[in-house]
Length: 311
Ligand SMILES: Cc1cc2nc3c(=O)[nH]c(=O)nc-3n(C[C@H](O)[C@H](O)[C@H](O)COP(=O)(O)O)c2cc1C
Image (tube, rainbow, N blue to C red; front, side, top):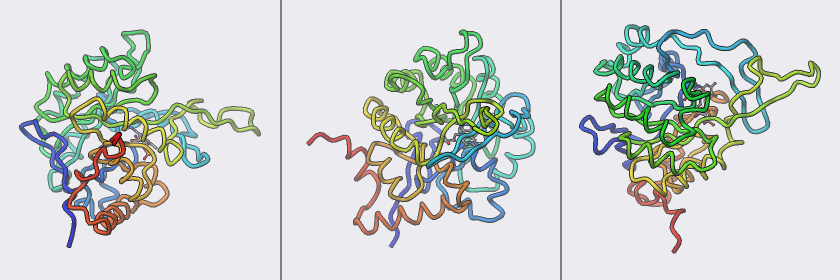
């Protein structure tokens, strides 16, 4: 017997976003899925999320771009990607043949760019939805990230919604005092859900060179080191919104996924775990299924948000 782990990430949207299970890949850790699909059955996963895609192709930062840290890693890739036009013409036709939904993670430097990206991806076969990364400095507002200000985050949501008929999630940054006003603003402005959270800003120093390890100086910390932070952010965000919260941050095992669901998540993304073991997402899915069977659960609804109960 198998447990029904299916989840709908956009229940109120006309296109919906039905996942056969809550295990998703995290943006930037599976490229666009084509290489991994040669070795593993991507159709078994709940959904895939593309590499962060910008309007024009980007070469990214200089090297080193990644470094291992205690219980995690840091990266400063600098959004190396092929640009939205190449994604639409070369990659989306492959996704179209897959039954697993693919979300395109987009990042604009201005409001207008978010709108243009959303419009370019609208109606493209193979694209099931978007994940809008708002961890980008808003050049027009003095460099504060769109995702650090409820009004700026809401304006991105309205811009994207005006330019697409696709369901979309907004990926929030942990780099805020309180994630709750941002989560609420994004829900009110019309997104279908949020991904909580992106990487945590960090620094690593090479004492031999007496310099930062990464060419970009700072990088984003990910992996098990950030899981307790992500759990707290998921707990806080999901306590103030009705729409789905997708967790991202340090999930390495099926039990980690259960923890995120108990904090309030509807789905969980697997990122850094895949760098240690490319089959991590599939193993985690097996572990989650086994846990649910052992606990006699009929579905994850039975445990979603239970850790937030006060009784
Ligand atoms: C090498 C690397 C590249 C990433 N690229 C992106 C990206 O392009 N867009 C994005 O929104 N998040 C990106 N992320 C963040 C991940 O999607 C994820 O949110 C984060 O790593 C936390 O999850 P994890 O601890 O499971 O890796 C990247 C992470 C890593 C490690």
